[in-house]
Amino acid sequence: METTWTDAVVVARHDATPRIAVLDLARADGGELWEYEAGAHIDVMVGEAGLLRQYSLCGPPGEQRKQYRIAVLNEAASRGGSRAMHALAQGDTLRIAAPRNRFALTPARRYVLLAGGIGITPLLSMARALDAAGHDYELHYCARSRTEAAFAADLESHGRVSFHFDDRAPEQFLDMERDVGGPADGTVLYVCGPGGFMNHVLGRAAELGWPESALHTERFSAEPPTDADPGEAFTVRLASTGAEYHVPEEQSILDVLLAHGVDAPHSCGQGICGSCIVRVLAGEADHRDDVLTEEERAEGQFTLCSSRSKSPILELEL
Image 1 (cartoon, rainbow, N blue to C red):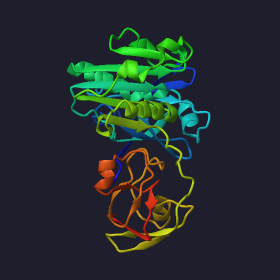
Image 2 (image 1 turned 90 degrees about the vertical axis):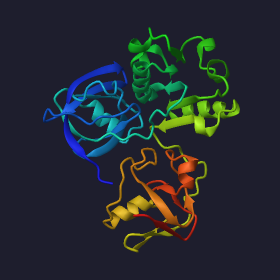
Image 3 (image 1 turned 120 degrees about the vertical axis):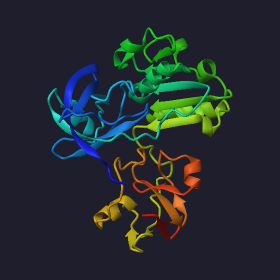
């Protein structure tokens, strides 16, 4: 799948917290940007090395197409992307791709939004879309402190928003049983944030009886595999040409295909953005992504960058 790119310029920048920079981006040629729906993200290519990263769009969708707003956390363990983004100033240029959305709002009677830290970014856009449409929802925003909660000033007077700060009284910590409760007909949960936060929320939701079909998630980094075994080597076959490539233990399918000049779709390289999804035609997949649902996996969808094969040969619709 071809990615559509455009040159963009930083038209405004401010620090929402000591570690979170908010960037407003516009097309360098002054033209309109692509439409998007709440939950969407964009690929960003930044720096001399052309680092490729993904950031959720946190502005109000549908209001205007002249600017996109993203918020970037300066990660201590950054692979370089967040540092490059934080170095940007007003007037600097970068490249951005058309928005993609695997975290869109599905039709429901009621929505419960659960944000941890920088995970507020896609949920902020959702809250604004739900406000505009008059839908029933509540937003729980968890952060280390008030000073580390980006957009807190925009939300603290909102009647549907509850804050939960680590440095305040324990009784205001997020309590899933008290604050969310068990499943209700027509109600869905949307969860985004650091891995530890998401694992806790999703684990408690499961204990409270929430079905997987009611849980919608987006991760900003891949979860470490529970099994350190990288899996055995195997062969990947491309249905379009019949070409076969050996995939050793230490390399991903995506790495092997790109090394052989195959035009394979990709972006994050971690199994969290959905850009590299293809279909398995034959063989047994070993799914290691954090983006596909069990239903999508059962339908044959597969991520090239993180997943592997349990069978000697895996044939892909590519």
